[in-house]
Length: 305
Image 1 (spheres, rainbow, N blue to C red):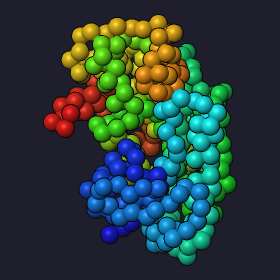
Image 2: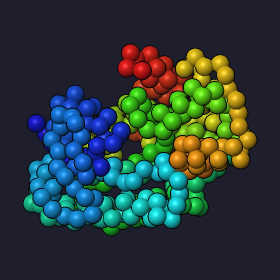
Image 3: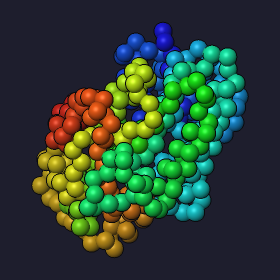
């Protein structure tokens, strides 16, 4: 079986991708700090150093790097430092690891973030747009800079500037569902901020395409072609959950609830961006779920929910 290494692969995105690749006939190898209770080959890695885990790279056809501390947290100075270092340091070490084996993967798919474009209500950003200002754009640019420096000469590199991923078994959608269940699923703030999103199935398909199609190179925005406002996103979510109570909270209550109830950064809800990929359109990539209503119909029709 053809092996694909997934670093930082034991989170929501990694497990989803591993299951997808296994169904495609590949052998996913998860590389992370802690072994999941799942039937996948695993190698332990602290995210910082070289070690025995490098051996799984020998002869693998691709590496997908998802390593990085979750941004779903209160942005203390320590957490901000961890968010940056967990991405930059791990990417740098992966580059060193690839150069340490005789037959390294020929393609490296690197997770990045659509937050790199900052927060804009008026503009729909594509690959030709300028990047933004703030913590998330700073982290995104540092992340991509170290990737380009670490990428071996004969390895094809694909960066995916990924938006908000919606799926069944994890991610921020779980918190949003909890908010709706509390009757607080109205708009956040003005409700005009962008909610750019992608279904986990489409992200898996995109990563697969980046691995198997040599035309894919450079960076792409990994987001569904129809971003929506926060107000529309929450309306669609309430409809999918059959919830008819939708209180909207003022900003001071959102900030209080985010910090003290959900233990996260209120800016994740207050701000947003509209992004859309021109390059994926040019590559004629097909989204199974281009519209939010289609995505929610799929996610909420399953008995797993």
